[in-house]
Length: 463
Ligand SMILES: [Zn+2]
Image 1 (tube, rainbow, N blue to C red):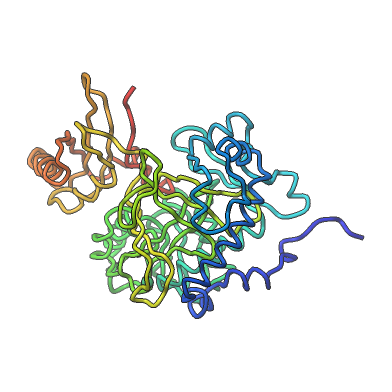
Image 2: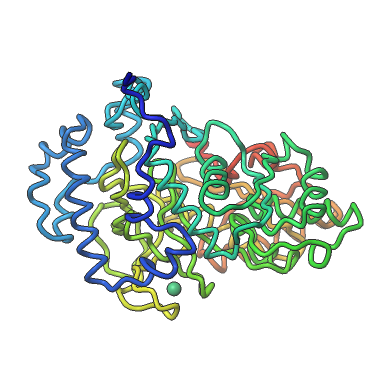
């Protein structure tokens, strides 16, 4: 008797692996494909996704208004004809069609036929954003994450601590699925410091000689501190080879303390893992072009910018069967390297690391300022721990930024440290900000250290 239900194991795994090779095969095949092969594949997948998105109300409405039709996609350059949208458009869609919005292309009842997962974005500001993933989308997403982890040095048989929050957000689960289903790693599912104490996490990483710890750089520093308190040396008593996420925060300090350089990859809630660190560890990220087309536009005007110029990332996924994302202006800032072959041998387009949020931008006396850039500036000021939190406020008739900085000197020296930080910011960014010093750990309630998946570094308190 046919139930009309497809179980997870009934997915066409041969097709998935042929179309989206997992590691290590990926790094012997698709990763080195020539530009023509990549472009041909992208165009076919793009046309397919455009016709799928055309049947989704959110896209149909916007495309008709802009005079765009999927049949206009004859070359990759034609992609620029489709209008972009931002998270604000997604939020409006959710507000009008709660709870899922009208951009998903699949609904909860589709789960009767195909397994689905629902994850919602952190939603620190505004309503959180749901994304429905079909079983296919989960598997391909896990493969792309497995590629990132493999490029960073994680290998089959490794024990890995997953200290991301196993919560409503995709993050921890995406790592978990990559490690368990596509990389044959043994995952210890600690979750954050709120779920499993930092002491316990350090003990597990030590006892099992874990090869990677998945969490932010800020939490890695906290774990190092705890390890030292427990009489352990982060450099010699552990077997850590990879610190995915370790760049979030003070990556250089993480490298100093753990002796491992964190490598960046890039992903985002609705589209999953977009780009992986070059295996040569040169700070460049290779875009997974069998799954994505990435463009960069001016954050204010939405116009395309030349290669090498920083702007907002516009991402189109070409791997899913469920919720489409077609020219999504994510407002994350980065830039594209000119096309060409990387020193690692790959022709995949390269982008720079994540450089901040376009919508966190604050204009102070005509200067564009991003909180992430402030973090970069203060990371090596003596007396400051590198932990910080920025608040944009309105003072009289102009915008001001208050930078709260954690200090590790005796409090009576905070005044001198604050002066150093203020002058360093003025020198690097060309604009004065007010610095307020606090003790170590006092920013945790602002940043979500120990409880949140991604640290919050900025709050807009302007009316
Ligand atoms: Zn490379």
